Structure formats: structure tokens, C-alpha cells
Picture 1: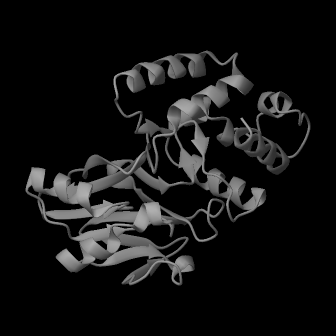
Picture 2: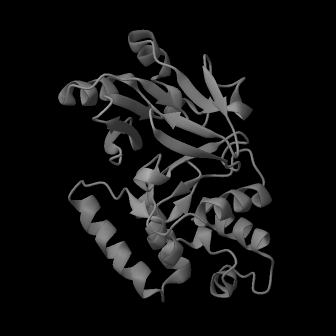
Length: 256
């Protein structure tokens, strides 16, 4: 079976929505439709018909298009079991260790609390693609609105254990700001410096920085390296446990 065709659809001010298409079955899913209008435009441009809606968490900028798209296409909404009370009209709910079969493309589901308590991520091994919402960003991670540092660090450890070639499809174009913060605490990292320069070039050309690969993130994203002594020292937490270090990295970004 061929890998899913993945189309990045910009929405709102800095959201990314994703279309997942299988040409053999004409299956087309949308991940986190912030708004129905750009999704409709992207579908129409390709002659595709929507068949599924996948949600990672309940924030309105990730589910804002659900109602209109479901009403038009009559498609199921698949989302986090832990957010049943906060995402209306879900047809299928999933959680950690579950799988979801998208017409032959099987997604592994991870609970990834931290940004919200009920956040999930979908990993399609056959397409080497992770849809992680606002848990993991290119060079960053989501704000810790509801979870604890221990929960968030556990979530990130789950994701960083995936294959290095995994492509990271996150919920926002935050990479330039994330790069500036990463360089402020890991400026001696040559791979990070090169990546930051490439990000600056892409954004100057109004090009997306997504997807990155997990391998790139492992080399350059400080939020995935809270157990790295050099990162701990950089945030004033030398010798501390990774949860404490992660909390310091997150607090540093919140105030950067």
C-alpha cells in the first residue's frame, strides 16, 4: 500500500491543518480542521471528497471546522476519549494503545497530556507521519495549559521513541520563535545553528517549516532533551531530574 499523500493547509493566523489522502480508495481525512473554508478550498482544488475528521484535542482552533464539515459530508469525527465532554459529536473515541484503521492505513494512538489533559497523537507507521497537534512543535512544545511537567515530559518521551525518520506534522507555524529560544540556551549546537538559518530563509520566503523529522528534533529541540546534562546546565538546573529540567525549559520559553 502506498503512503498517504499529505497536504498542509494553512488556516487562521498560524494554524496548520492536514489532509491525508489515499488515491486507491479515495479516502481523505482532515486532521484538526481549525476552519472549514480553507479545508473546502483545498479539497475542491484536488477534486477530493472528505471521508474522516481526526482531532487531537479540544481547543477551538483545532475543531472549529468540525461542525460544518461533518454537516456537509456526513463523516465520522475521531478524537480523544479523554475529551469526550469537550469535543461535540465524536463518533469514535480513542486513547493510548488504541489503533484506528483509516481504510488500511493504521494509526497508532498515543495519549499525550500536557498541553491539555486529554490530548492525543496519531502515528501512521506506513507513511512515517506523526500528527501531534500542540504536544510537539518543530523546535518546541505546546504551552502547558492543563497538564503537569511530569505528564508533559512523559508524553514527549513517548513521541521521541518513534523512528528518527518520522515526519512531524504539528499544529502551528511557531518554528522561528522556537528557534530563537532554542539558540538562546543551546547556541553552541552547530546543527541547531544551521537549522535556525534554514528556518529564517524559509520564513522570509513565506514557506512552511513543517514537516521536520524526529531525527532533526532529537538533535536540536531542547524540549526533547531535558535529560541532556548540557541543557540542564543551560537552564540553571545542573544535576536535576529531567522533569525539573523540562519545567525550567518550559518556563523559560513562556517568559522568553
